[in-house]
Image 1 (cartoon, rainbow, N blue to C red):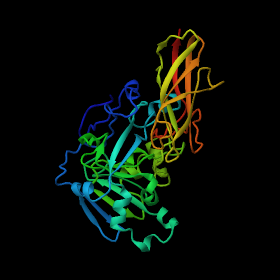
Image 2 (image 1 turned 90 degrees about the horizontal axis):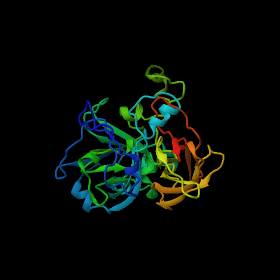
Image 3 (image 1 turned 180 degrees about the vertical axis):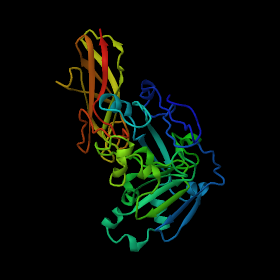
Image 4 (image 1 turned 45 degrees about the horizontal axis):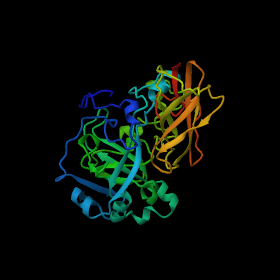
Length: 370
């Protein structure tokens, strides 16, 4: 796991070994942690969530109210750090700024709680602000956790209001994870879960929800987690691009090879094949993953992998397996995924200074095939 500290200066940021991660369809242990400050330790008996802004009836909701006054929904979805696979971008393309995440900054879990939509309907969106669907798209829902962070005195993020109000978007105020009360590290007693969108917007320890006409003005929405243009080559040249670059929201279609890993020795079967396994993710709300292909000859030909778990699941990853014919020697294995929306991985994605949203082919390099 990457890092185990827990303070504002040294937040808890870690990921599991990739083989351990894909051992289970549901991530029950060793889920990745991404923080910008210390872990909050809150009491469910006193914690409240304030709902305000452009609403007709501001609310102050206790955890008991969230449990008893709203219908509870269970949603299984992958939650992914925007910087997942940053190490690959750094090593294959060019140096980037940020934690050197490998392929394990993702988890696939069952989340349970009321839908954000139901809470906002109870609060009432101001009718003078939602004349048309186009008007809804210009509005946002901002989430806040009032804790000291590395770059800000609180943590915040936002999504568009139309995403929050879409019944099929399944945005939750999650109270449970995998059938158990949230742990402190994963946002106890309540957190936001936004399927398909970068994990930075699924705010933990949420205590404020605000309907507003602009995005969250928090540092982590405005000055981080953005795919800056290639002209931003360092933090100095990035300055003029922060305001004009949109925050990353929907995560891209992706796949990763978990077995064999780069540099490992593997033995071919009597049929001359090597077993290759991994995970794949759909883009945003355009799941499920429909197809995963694997190549053992530098992309000259591709073999359809078997989707072992997660087939037909809109928000989830899939776990896949393929038996690929490979010649003996030092080989590179590749994977690529396609989702229901037709989004397909390309060999590489755009380099950006913060190293977010990388979704080039999954690959294992220098595999010693014997």
